[in-house]
Each structure stands twice: as structure tokens, then as C-alpha cells.
Amino acid sequence: GVNFVAMVDQTTGTGTSACLISDKSRALVAYLGASQNIRIGHLLNNYNYVEKARYFYTSGYHVGIDPESIMNLAHHAHKAPGKLFCLNLSAPYISQKLSKPLLELYPYVDILFGNEAEVQAFAALNGWQTNDVKEMTRLAADMPCRRPTGRTVVITQGIDAVLVASTGHREVWEFPVPVVPESEIVDTIGAGDAFVGGYFAQLVRQKPVDTCVRSGVYAAQQVIRQIGCQFPPQMSFKC
Image 1 (tube, rainbow, N blue to C red):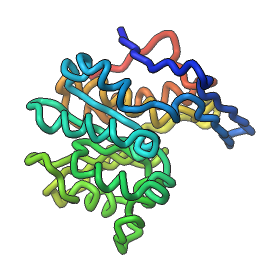
Image 2 (tube, rainbow, N blue to C red):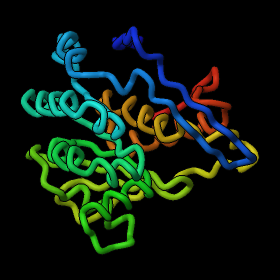
Image 3 (cartoon, rainbow, N blue to C red):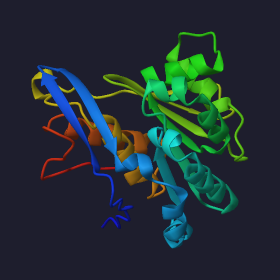
Image 4 (cartoon, one colour):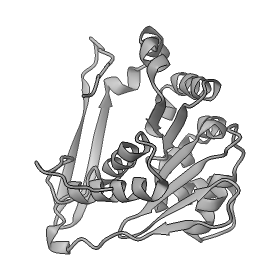
């Protein structure tokens, strides 16, 4: 199961969000609440979990809230053998508004996740003169990395192929996305997070990249068939 070690803020309520869905379109507004108050003390008080963990994952949102904790985890992952630090770009504004902490963190990122809009914003931040998302993916993989083995960049494009690039490889791999009938798409909220969860489900089992991507796509395509970010009672992904 999941050992959920949350920080409790007695003065601020838990964040909430409201979503308006009209046909296949959506609008989302969020109140961040107590999540804005998390600080490194909570991490340090629970460092026994950090010592035991092998995989560290954070969203780009956290970069602007508590960069000290994120850098602490990134440094820890790179000092300990067999550990990985992973980041999700999360939203275009992370590159646009939080460029300094993002670029300071990036050399420690072993696996980067994002979608086409997010990598386009990241490309603009770095001044890359290209409109080709595949080229942006490759350039993101080839940016300086403190890990001798380099990094992997995974970019989703909705119904289009998932792009994967690794440091030092000219080729950008494309993994087709199975078609989901439009009549079955109910709510796309949480699809990106579900993809990452599915990817990690196979990564922690030491499965190859193609299996990780297929698992991520499978998880995302289950979520978009549900109302809200949830899964159906039965799942049947096979490696």
C-alpha cells in the first residue's frame, strides 16, 4: 500500500479545486491552501523515508513553493547509488514564471515528464529556435546532467505519439497511442498524472521504456473514461 506522510497545517485548510466540464472541454480553478506552506522541516523530520526510497518524483508546482526541499531530494538522489530523481514540468507557467529554480534543479533531473505545451514553454525558456516537439524533446535530454548516464525525457501529446529521448542519442523514439473512441471519453482531468503513475508502475519493476510508456498510456486511457481522477474496478494491463 501507500504510506502517506502528509504535513498537517493547523492554520490553513487543505487545497481545493473546482472544475467545469462542457462536452469535451474543461476549465479548472484551484485554491492551493496548505500546500503553499510546506517547508523543509517536514522533509527533515521524515528523512527515514527518504533514506529508504529509491525513486523521487515531484511536480513542477512544488518548485515554486519549496525549492529547498526539492533540491535536498535531488542532491540526495545523486549522492546515493541506484536512486533516481524525476520531475514533471506540470504546466507552461512553471517555465515562464519559475525559470530560476527550475534551471537550478534541472541538472539533477534523471527523468523529465511533460506534455507538448509544457516542453514548448521549456524550449522558449532556453531559447531553442525550433517548432518541432521532437527536437525540443531531444534538446531537453541533451542539456547538462550530473548523472553520468544522462537523463530520459518523456513527452505526451494527447492522441499523438509519446516521445522519448535519452542523453546522447540523436533518435527520438515515438510510441503510438491507441485510439479511444470519442464517445468513451468522459473527463480528461488527471490523465497526465495517471500516465506518470502507470510509467512508474513498470519502472520500479525494472521494465524497459516501451513497457513503461505502454503502461502509462493504458493508465491514462482508463482515467479519461471515468468522471474524476479514478480508475475502474478492474484493470487488465499486461506487460
